[in-house]
Image 1 (cartoon, rainbow, N blue to C red):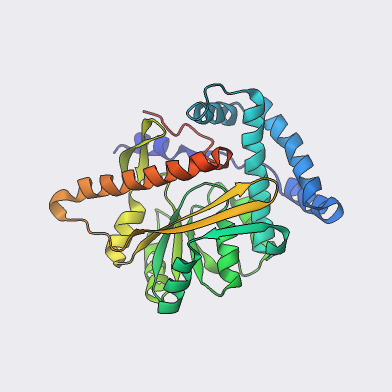
Image 2 (image 1 turned 120 degrees about the horizontal axis):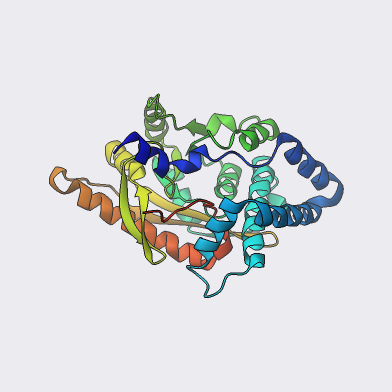
Length: 303
């Protein structure tokens, strides 16, 4: 893979972070004065603005929604961006432990409880769908240790705000740094300690190996890192999704995906492709349940 191809595949990492620290503080002030309902009104105005002037996000939203609906309108794009804004703001409330502000439905929470009871480490494989922070907040409330493996490069403002709101937020974050791959050792330590490590499997990191799967009717590239990591660490994978249904309902799902990942040397690529396709199939299932909850505002199906 050339450096140019790798850079294009990971272009979302180079996408400038939207919003400002002042904007985030303004939303927090609005929350204190008018409550979450007031924040939703402000975010509706912001979403309208971005739908008008953020051409790349508008184009990506339309391309995605066109795979689910026969006709896409401007207001559907506004709703898509607005849903992203609301879920992003809710991350701060969840980080602050404000789970009382939401209605939470849970399916498969017994899987997390069983892993915690056995002190068995596992990888929680999610996506940029709804909010994983909702799952983490509920787990923390039940003393289940979930670490999150993330790219910080294009989300430093909101993560700094999360850290300010919840000082222990950083303690459970493992930053992916291709230039310093020792983060894998941290993941290994957490897994061996019987903790859970969450990773989102629908974005490609810089120079990361990929496999192609059919997703929403067209081929798309997905990273294979989560599966190779599980194979090396000999730990199971569970799928986790936190769908957001306005105005304040979150539906959390956790289901077994692979008890153990085996990657035979002679058929390694085929095994990875099969895992990626299974993941893409389940991702499509949940995306169709909450179409406005998928937050990848870039050209996901590029050739």
